[in-house]
Image (tube, rainbow, N blue to C red; front, side):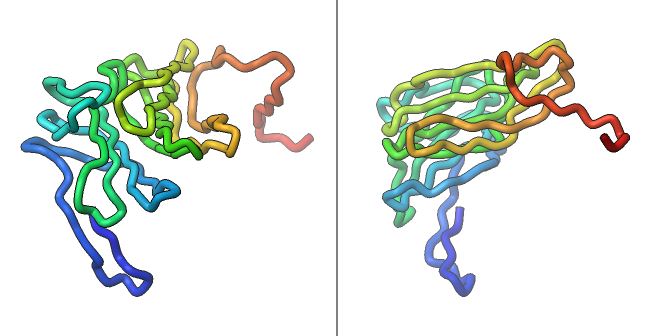
Amino acid sequence: MIKADPSGNQIWGTLLGGATADTGTALVIDTDGNFVLTGSTGGQFPTTRGAAIESRTGPAVIASEISADGSKFLYSTYLPASLAASSSIAVDTAGNAHSAGQTTEGHAFVLKLSSDGSTIRYNVTFGGGGVDAATAITVNSAGNAFVVGQTTSPDFPVTAGAFQQHLRGDAE
């Protein structure tokens, strides 16, 4: 991970990961200037004391928060084994991290992690009969999460009265 100034000069850089292949997939800066990120690991990713999930063997999805100056982990945790990939992360005004991606079953997920990384507040799966994935997430000032993604599920669950538009290739 590297922090650069407006001219592109490196301010600081750090290596984040363990002994296996690790990939960062999304990054956001919280109101204190700290870096909150998500990604995946092949295993042996460093976690912090009190993490929601302190250890795991094998590939996993992770979330971490690094101090604004890059000097330390504020938290680092594995996420549940039911998650295959995390593609996006957002932080609410209380500092909780909201992650979105795809489960091992091929459905979309949204997960909320406490501001200190110690508790998974919720982990919700959305999907139909096909393959689904959440690709981006944002959170408003009230703490509501908004998620977009993709689906091949004709039966993807939508709420009654929700706007639905299917493009057919012909103009209406």
